[in-house]
Image 1: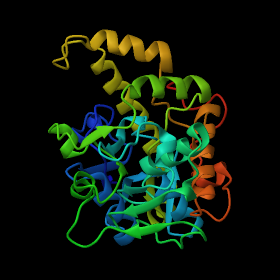
Image 2: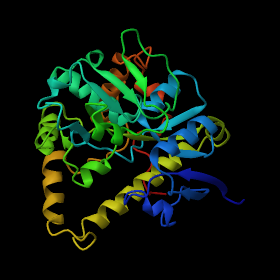
Image 3: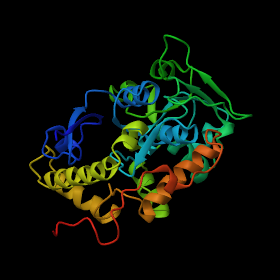
Length: 327
């Protein structure tokens, strides 16, 4: 019987590349792997158009999609995580020196729902005393999953033809929470600076306090595909695990990247975050991670209810003590 052919839209990371190059494949599946799609477009195309059988998806949008009853199921695979203090930018003429200086200001967002933004907005509120309703938010993109803003939330749209970056430089917005490094900062525009000069220290302190290395993305499957192939979620989970193992082994080779202190950076990461910062599955730490993201989303008026984490994901259990290589 021939393998089933499925499309997978995913980022081109070291821990997913073995799936792209065919070194790893789920048992019984021939994957068509699409990596040349930026994250925000991939998320939109999967949730709005169901263009892919399997996709790496915004964790925040996944939460809203599940609550809205959209026909997608998740597996506890988290291909992308990132601390977010690095991506808060301010206009240098606005006198913003501390997080609390954002209160009453107009702050741009890629989208209100973007996972990176939800994390940083929640962190600003819980760790730095910046209530999310004390800020005037301006979003650049349409949301992946539509929602009705909560009463008292100040949320508007960037005018057509404008960008957050141009508005920040011009001083039309006071600050910006972004999903990536913005071009004016990269080019050294004096009108733009980071809110947190020593962002790494802030991120390390956040991890030491909470144990959270923020999950950005999950892996989702179209519901009809998962129902037609009930064995697929487990085989996908196993394949992603194997791909991660190969990718991590590769990056421990100091020749992989042209960086002088690559090895010491890896050792520093392991000392702080542990041996597997990209752990898959619903471990205690991953549950806390996802529960915190869901709490922020609920507080910000996007989720009506706090979800049962177990109900969000398809089980990948093979039974206690099973799943090894003994015959």
